[in-house]
Image (cartoon, rainbow over all chains, first blue to last red; front, side, top):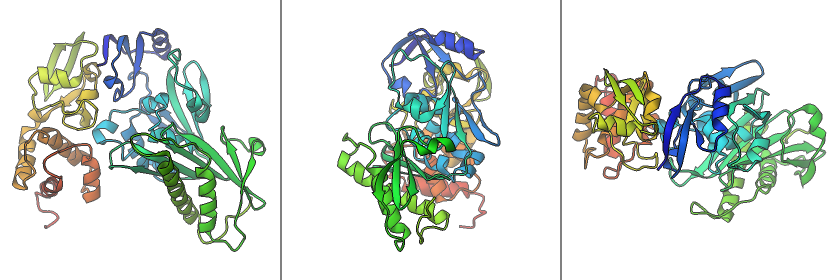
Length: 304
Length: 154
């Protein structure tokens, strides 16, 4: 069982950060998983009083505080309007309403759990995280870092850019409230496509594609962010179907290339082979849905 | 440490440990309807309302309800009895172990959603596990309870 001797609700991030420099301190998010761990700590650091419990929207981006609950993501009108209901879809299967009223965005993202629907969804969007000490960085960069006991920073905000991308989310679960056995998020951007696949069962990773001269080009690692960064790191992934091909053939090729960008493993929930198969199916559905939304399902993906 | 909060409409002042969970606190204060069913944040039996929102009291630090209003089934007797009657009438009450947590979430749903359809009801109540009923009788009961004033005419 989780045990601690002292409870502190810091009045400033500086104080919270100072408290966290001790290995005997622990930051509590929603406590949904933490309370199941067998650990003994000296000090519980509660970030509830630091104004981190809100979703704020500006012209360029959403700022999501670390203490925003998953239920708030699920029901936030602005986020769901901008990203086509992705935030509702990636949260609504998580355990139950009561659980989602407790679990926090900060806990989900900082934990970098393999099963995280939240991490998967955010990785297909143009997302950054802000650490109190480490500053702002792309989520993909933060997510790729292994969790270490020496890591003592505090995640304060998650930022999602409003770059007009269209997004969609799908997951497969043994039962509706279980962990996902595969989780997929896809987005159609003004430079191409971005996908994230989680619960492989490894933590979510992202891949980007663009269409150039009848070829699909792939970019792994850091996703495309700025226009000037678009011309580096792309490699040919697959030839695209001829011009008479339907949206279905395009979706098949893109889904195959996207699904093949990740490594899948076996655990109690499912085998690696099964996961790889499901990933391609779900990604194809996402692509077809996104094409249909832009009226391209029957035509060829236009070249850029 | 000292804690002050409202439990079922009454001001409470008590001593807690830093790591006391809300579940254990409300039970120690006599609210025995709140149960620990699973220990894995999964079953919904420990559901209480904090500031009107349903939460898993097994996963909430007691210290976090400082100054807040907490309701358990003991504080919502009238509503709970009414909803409970529908549950019993439809055969949704078998061993009864999960009923308090289930009813708490039904009451929370009624406060949060306006005229929910079947899918919305199922989704809202998915986090309340029952190992006797198979959920069909509960779903019938919830629908009838929500429509008890007869607006839907069924």
